[in-house]
Image (cartoon, helix red, strand yellow):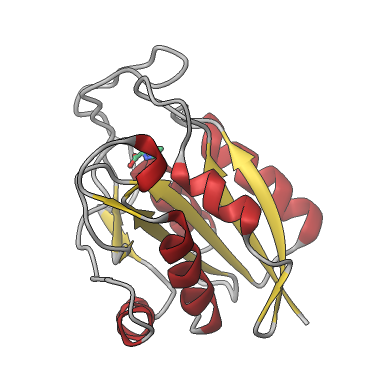
Length: 193
Ligand code: PCA
């Protein structure tokens, strides 16, 4: 079996739950050819990626997939790219609110995901759950994580990807997606990485 490190975030921005962790914790421990290791990470610039890297050093995964909430989206959106930018419109859970800063001062401008995002989005749609490739993960903590991981694992065999998901129905926000659909979509996504 191959190893997949999959992460979800703690709640942020006044929400009581984060559907990313709600979904990740309910995923089966084995999907397709992968055994999953699940990790909850904080919504804090820099620290979140460090937590992922720390766990990855311990388990040496074949692939890392991070999941995050993207309020306002109505589809499951695999992210194509991470950019070298931190810009927060709300503070993170440690009170950091960077404004137009680089993640790494001498880093590349951007990295493409090393997961087949188009194939993943198509497969999720075919399974009856709305999905769409996204060309921006924003400039908040989710982008911080995907950019840092893509930079760390560039030119290695370790695949790195990020999937944003909508609010789940339990959060009383619109648009939202039932948690069951989010889970179904993620399972199909993982079967196609
Ligand atoms: N979404 C935020 C950070 C944590 C999360 O679930 C983002 O899109 O950056």
